[in-house]
Image (cartoon, rainbow, N blue to C red; front, side, top):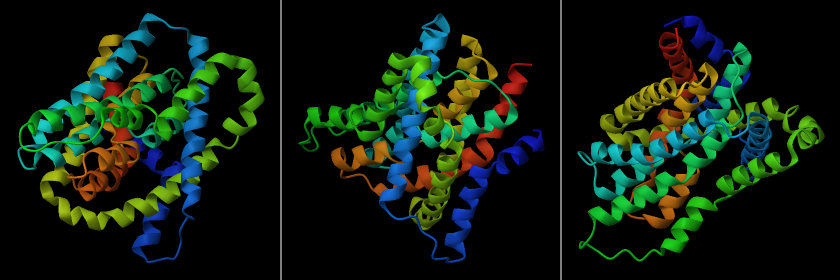
Length: 323
């Protein structure tokens, strides 16, 4: 693998500020981001990429490649939690296995955004419609995880959650709602809307991303201590499963005929794990699962692995496959 790809990724300002956040925790600095602010930053990032994705979708139109990509995204969002559930069930109970499987079946929008930043730094083009794939992969894993819990605990105890609450949490949680809503508004307003909002959605974007990753570094470093509860099995899972999912994603991307930039974003979507939307849903619907397991593996292991090593590694694989 070309070491310059890793160096280029690490020297990307948002990634360096992620490191700075982790270092702040390790050296016991009192640096912290006030609690409401990170939520605002995450909403801004979702709004910006959703809106830009809608505008780009109008430009590209609904082509065969777009349809195949979106279908592939839904397929992976269903397939990943199913197969990872059976891998996890070897060592864990049904509740923890289903919660972690759902976490890895869903996606990390910030990892996706970081990959887009990496591609922009390298001058590699990618299509805005990939944001639609991001939106479609957020929710199905939650549904699949809950179906698995119901199937494998049938007869052992009654589960008293309402499916209406599950569906609302899966499809109307703040991140999904804002992402999809911004995408639709981008489609409706097109180029005119883009020119009106460009100073806000584009000019501020990388500064906000950098500040958000600083906070993510703080949070990830604080979660590292929870890894003692997960053991070697889950730490290995949190590194190896993203590699497997990215490899599957790249093969699908090659089969569909995606460009290299789109293939990287699709691989990142397949390889990432949710640490916001799915954990919130699992706390509500599967209280028997241990949050320290599915949150710490996704946030303290998979997220840093992907933004530091995974993204350049997946691009290296693309360079080999697309050669």
